[in-house]
Length: 105
Length: 406
Image 1: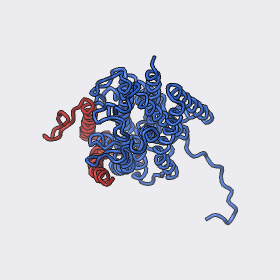
Image 2 (image 1 turned 180 degrees about the vertical axis):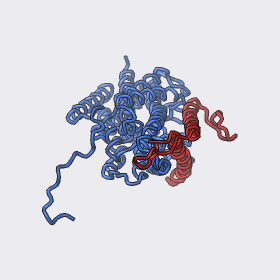
Image 3 (image 1 turned 180 degrees about the horizontal axis):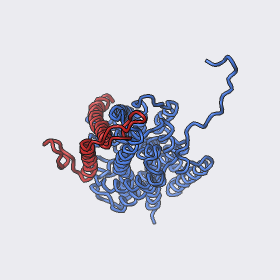
Image 4 (image 1 turned 90 degrees about the vertical axis):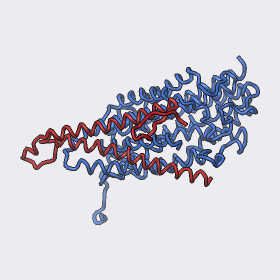
């Protein structure tokens, strides 16, 4: 019984850590992407005092926004690769920083 | 046809039936938030989720033969059934599996009728545990594993059920809080549109992961039945037709949509806005994937519920209906024992009557129970049309006597 409790806590803090990085980190990047796009298009996309036209459009915001979306997409692609790889008896290895697909041991 | 073949067919049909209930019971885990926020129309959401479950089921080629080993001792560690159970064409083992599956389905249907998102894995394991205790005694259950890794009822079922909703809830709460901080000053109409897309993406990931995780369990159970009755010999692969049937059953179930449960998860717990929905689904997807990578078996239902609660806690000013959450938690607590009781009763009944007749009787009882609960559900139908109605009926203004206010 206590062995199991110990093993659970060993696994659970890792799940929490990965969960926070991917499950809260990626949505944060996505939110920042939306913020950048709003900054990029200016005008009514941002909250401004009634009667004024709001900030002017800023192309840099648009570029940054789409870049951030790409980061999120890469994260999702990693997630799908992970599902598919583990289904085929492989796993993702982060040994070389870049994810690579290796055999499960 | 021999006795064992008839029972085998009943087992396969019942297992696919369980897989089907597993599908509609869990549609909500992935799609409740997207439906509640209007990111996807209800019918589109269940179609997308069903398709991804189908794909996911095929992606899981990892052999799931030893799935029952986590909780009961019916198989050896390489997946072959225990020899003591395979005499007479495996009738003894087939009856345990059949009774266990019936316990799982009955509990799944009852919680669906009540609109409670209980765990389908707990229902399946509970049914199997009950039928095993009835058939083989208490020693037939693998309570704690052998102490070298996470295993047994405690390690694979109870501890994950306690810990995973908490972890998912924390992740979702942090995510929600961060998102709201990040978009301060951006017009709400603008953000909601963006977050709807994020929601659809993250919900799709949850559906895919669900297909890979849950369809496997039924595949493992059916293959075990085939091994026991001598219709299959390999312990390193699963018959292709089993994979196809299970994938189709879970996808069809998902497409049917358990609207009662979708309604509870999407509208009952928290009034979900698109940013919260995205945070909740991302947290679910990340926690499910990270856990399966680390061999931490969990129920997608517990994770999804924890995430949605967390997204309510993380949004400043949001209201969480703790009373609804409390009902859910009590359903979680009794899922395993309740399914076990049904599984055990079914086994005793099947054993008492004996042979094919016993198996047929418990199968008919299952059909009767399922039919009854379906008819009951028609009294207060929940469908894709009213799934998003307001949770609280508009209460008539209370008559407060003058002076009593305060």
